[in-house]
Image (cartoon, rainbow, N blue to C red; front, side, top):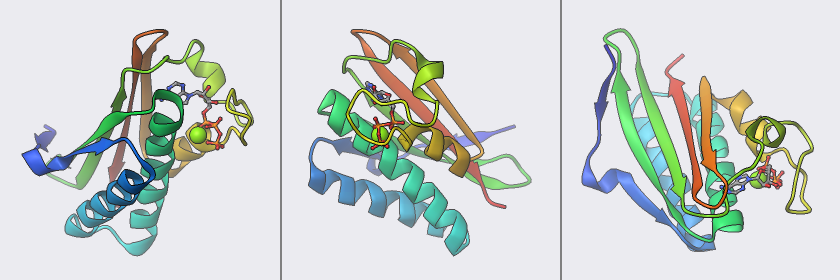
Length: 138
Ligand SMILES: Nc1ncnc2c1ncn2[C@@H]1O[C@H](COP(=O)(O)OP(=O)(O)OP(=O)(O)O)[C@@H](O)[C@H]1O
Ligand SMILES: [Mg+2]
């Protein structure tokens, strides 16, 4: 059984460069709280930072929700990034190394996926995008 704990302070808006700093700090604090080691903390923060940056760049604004998980055996965290931006027409393509519509490197999504245990994308063109990452204490 996976128990998710969501408290009001676990929701964070993404709407500026400054909010990205807050996103990273919140995710880092959660990882520390869960007992993640420095390497796992950094992997999670890096993945979250890329996803928040995508929200800001492609949708201008959105929000991040952090939930602490406990499956009775291990502790973990689920971080959700939601926006109501343009959406992603081809999710599989977006997850490919080097694919970009932003004249960038195209490694944010595939890189984030490699840094966590699970990454899922739910997106509808014209409606928005939800990216969920899950990481468990190793
Ligand atoms: N939240 C989002 N809303 C709409 N499109 C998105 C969103 N996130 C990613 N995308 C699309 O997926 C593509 C790939 O994203 P990814 O983060 O891998 O690369 P990038 O942002 O283009 O470059 P990099 O992250 O390396 O600077 C983006 O170019 C964009 O087309
Ligand atoms: Mg990106």
